[in-house]
Length: 275
Image (cartoon, rainbow, N blue to C red; front, side):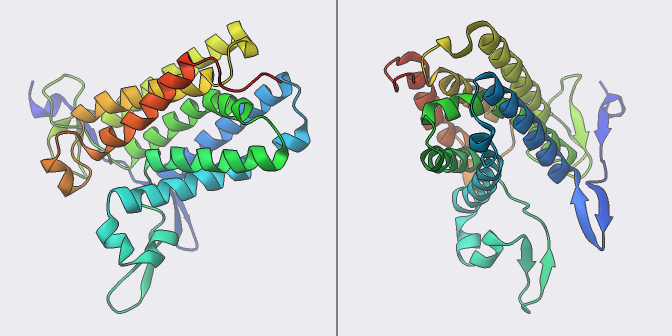
């Protein structure tokens, strides 16, 4: 197949701009993903007859937990040397040049592993403060999470980032912003996988409801998402230079603990007591 037969991908990354501040497709996909997750969670809480007063503060916990965790995860896992010397850029969506002036950049680096860890910590605080069983919260959020992850990966695709390795496959995509080489659309692989995991989780819940032991849906989510993440990493380019000398890249190493925790939660029926 000649290069001209491949699909060339080079979209404008900005959806629109207000007063010089751009709204990028990546941010838009994040918001859509979180909104869909919110709708799913609200329906689950209603079906389980959990009061609205308990549900209402959940969104802010999820939003802050994911954003803070994902940002710190990227800065500390992937670029610690740079961000530890520029801690302000770690916290604020800006870039500071050598002269001290700054440019609004948005949060250009977010790591899903950090976002997952941040979300779990936020949910622990939420469950404690609202006096709700933690495993109920984790199971419900696990059913909704894959649809959010799906849209985040679509956002990565719109940004032409987290690209795959070169391929001769018919479905290879040329990311013009990167180079003119046909590559695996790894972002779409993940988006499709997460959508399938979301649908499968809903099917299981509609059939079994809360009759499965606490922690099952949480374990199912962690196991399926991070197991797929582990293997799809073999088709991705390195995210940072130091990964080129590693047997497994950072994404794979960070996925292993989540897979272990997920399998344990799916199989171990002694987690918590239903109440």
